Length: 75
Figure: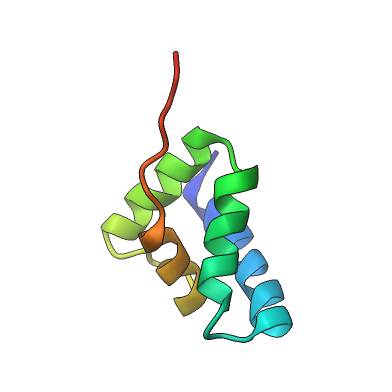
């Protein structure tokens, strides 16, 4: 999956949770959503993107992604 699409998805999820639980609680909700529903490869890509600055990620999405542990990819 390409990074701009992942960034867009993360920002959309963040926008939803910003409205639902507020900007203070949104990063935890976004992180939980990404952990539960995103494929480990997608999580790896967005985590790597955030590690080099996270261009394009809104503040809630960036905080959420930076709080994620690296996924365990099983072969």
